[in-house]
Length: 271
Image (cartoon, rainbow, N blue to C red; front, top):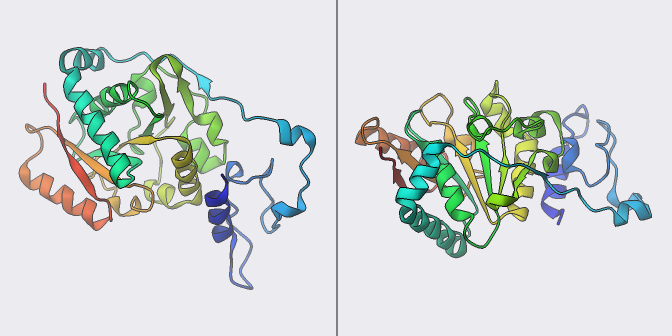
């Protein structure tokens, strides 16, 4: 189960002879109980696990009861079949093309992207498989607030401060969903996405969930998609016809293509 994390850790720890020992991956991405000190390389084979360590099982994610926005419940009630069809299309894409991590983005804000993702996540929860909803809007996170949650840890704590990924994932058992919030806006989004902590977190989530929905930020806010291509399998471009022109959609498709992110399709929101 740890092949990907171990490979990432070894690749990041490697330095040419003479370089200063820096850049140890965050603690949750090491197989040991603590993160090794900078410059100290510890081999897994040298550690003899104690019986307690062998028998101990990871703690389950904290259980929460999201307060779904009224608009999401209204959309589900009045347009449920549309979201069910979209959910089925995503499941088929996962099965046929092995698309597991999907980025939902838009050209601008206020196009209904987050509302669509929330409603779609509820539709996916009615199908077999584990679905994770991640707040990846690095400059304007809204997931926790919209769902009435006050998480103690978030994706930002995992990537920037090395907190345990398992402690940041929230389980909503009544809704058959898992959530990974972002507690605060990220000061430097590009650097955030280029850190080993981000890559390791996504690698681990891939193993644990069947579909991962990233509620990403708008493309035209200064954050290029070029830094996402290593961790995102495809993108869904959400747009509101009254706010986004055809020219803007074409430009958005060019930005995604330039970043190596395949466009899975367009999703038009409505009022």
